Image 1 (spheres, helix red, strand yellow):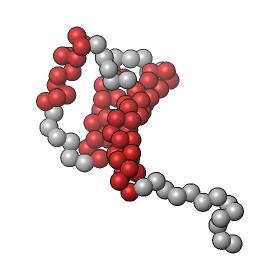
Image 2: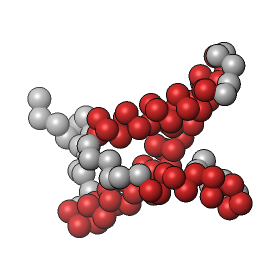
Image 3: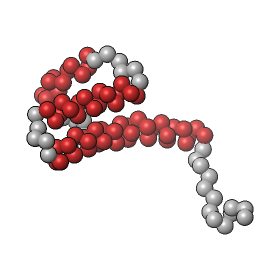
Image 4: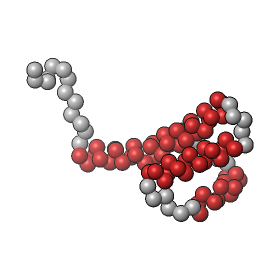
Length: 92
């Protein structure tokens, strides 16, 4: 997950100095570039490629947990839950 030890964080301060990422395509470009940088110093093997892919997927999962899930819970509380009909209550 994205929670590295505090003494390792200054190495990546440059990420805080990046300009705003303007759209999804630009975000995907940046993530892809980070994956390529990750692989730059690694042997080109399945395990390392896998780590590059799943590292970004785990971050996406954490982002979803911290932001999207909260937003969905707020919308559900505001608008009510989705009514689910069982197969016996659906008109045939």
